[in-house]
Length: 136
Image (cartoon, rainbow, N blue to C red; front, side, top):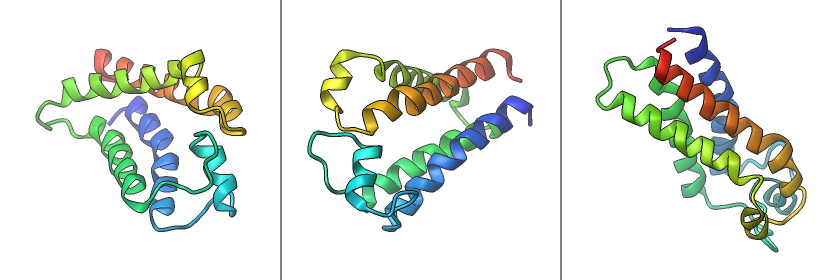
């Protein structure tokens, strides 16, 4: 277990935990569902959070991504690490594209996306890539 694998897991733990809480209907850290949806989804006119199944699926995906660096004998580990790095990198870049802004213009999501969500995805994508290339 390396320092980078631990860092990746820590950085993914918080959004994974939040998605699990949202899957069970706990609106945190914003108690108002409409305000939380505007801050986390950003779709035009959104007033409700995604349902329990989409939130649970994101929880599972983030948890798997957090665990994968530690699963040294997992089949297809390297291609999956590269795929995760690619998805996170593209998601991070999307935060700065005009086309993405048109899809998710709601505030405060638009601002949070450029200041927090996008940079976090870029850091995680780069971390997964670095981890894959160096094994550290």
